[in-house]
Image 1 (tube, helix red, strand yellow):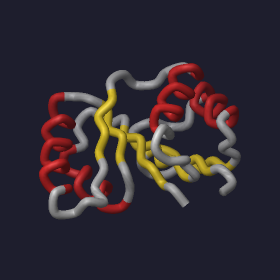
Image 2: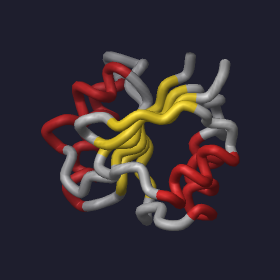
Image 3: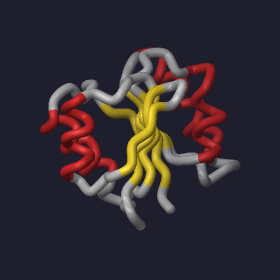
Image 4: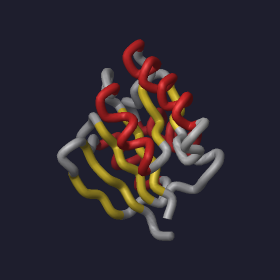
Length: 117
């Protein structure tokens, strides 16, 4: 199963390291997050499983959600998407459903979407 996190939090410095050890992370670009991502890149020299990608622009409508997930899937098919910093919105659900995700659940940090393997 390929799990990936999409972090929409403007300052995720305190939590990035722990999450990046567990799964690849796509991180909203802010000054604070760029600093945290730079540190993660340095750590990846010793721990190559760390994979952090910075992206610009929070997805808001269905098309932006589709584009974001398709970008994330250029290197791996996602079976579990952990969204941190946003609740499930109608545009997000519509896009993810269109992309084959069929199980959704709220989490304390946001929501999780899963698709069949």
